Length: 291
Image (cartoon, rainbow, N blue to C red):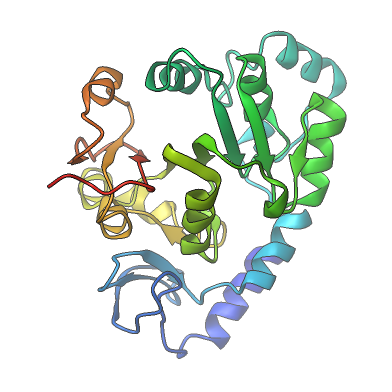
């Protein structure tokens, strides 16, 4: 409750501050949604990022995610299971939970066959994804902004989770993030980090709530609920098209059409099926697209 009160208080105090896009720094922005009368979602007319106002500073964001971050209704995302439950989760490799990522494990093995996949799990939380990637035989390098949750990953799941990006390995095949990019105060920093940590043929893959126009038209109530205190950014296909305008990409939403992705030539820019609730991008950010 205190977090919400602080958020609304800060929103009121900074209501008349100029809206500046946290991604491209443009001041050409417009209101596209609002809640609680004073909380507004802006769209940048340059890069098309949707962002709530006021924007968090990097320092505020880092402090918030050390201890305060809690997501109701998401179970083990932020709530550590008890010992008995945890042992069952480990034994079953998180099967039957919302944190089971075997669909991604299978897809990644098909995208990059016949080798040990090197992957960065960016925003690893307390390690439930890294644990599954490790069990699948991937070489995993994990990062989490929250020092306490990173320590939990080591203690409970025996996965090494770095809290400094400088410690992440280089020459990776995949830079993967799940429900991270919508929280970040500096998205271009993350993308530039991915460029640095991926090899020439490496793939940037991110999943997040879908802010695309097609999803909003299909479910306007859900669209309104998906931004605010916990989600300062709302990512759309338009934003990814701007950010990766020089790179091959495949942008889609859930449920993912695996066969279509596997048949993609990886040289062109594809955007399909954008009305699902989760937005997913596959981008070869160290390559140029073929017109």
